[in-house]
Length: 144
Image 1: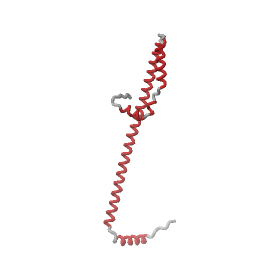
Image 2: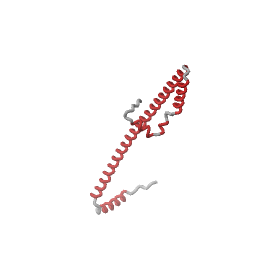
Image 3: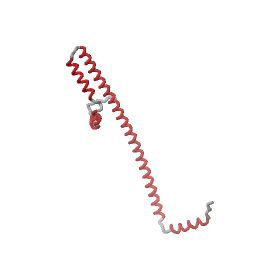
Image 4: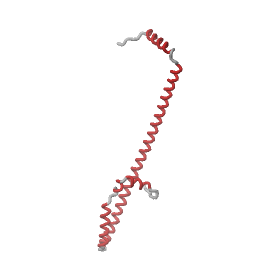
């Protein structure tokens, strides 16, 4: 069980503190206390503002990343659409050349088909700088 302190003994300690306080400039103590509290409030406000700035930056960066992802995915879709269309045209022309027994044209078309098949729509994506520069070209129109 805890012992309850004697209230009269508590007052004696306060009296001793009061005697020591006479030697201290209470105005200076108050000024230091107010200064410390003021500094604390300023730091809290600055840190709160900094957190808000970080949250705003984070939201902006997240939106930018999502937008870039969407452009990249749409670009890949269009690239594959373009490649599919190129293959379709080459095979259609190959069919026509074969029906006409035009061996020279058929051979040329087979070379074109082979070269198109060798190229990858991702080959230039390895060079991020190239992709970034392509996206920045003012005369280039990107449809998303």
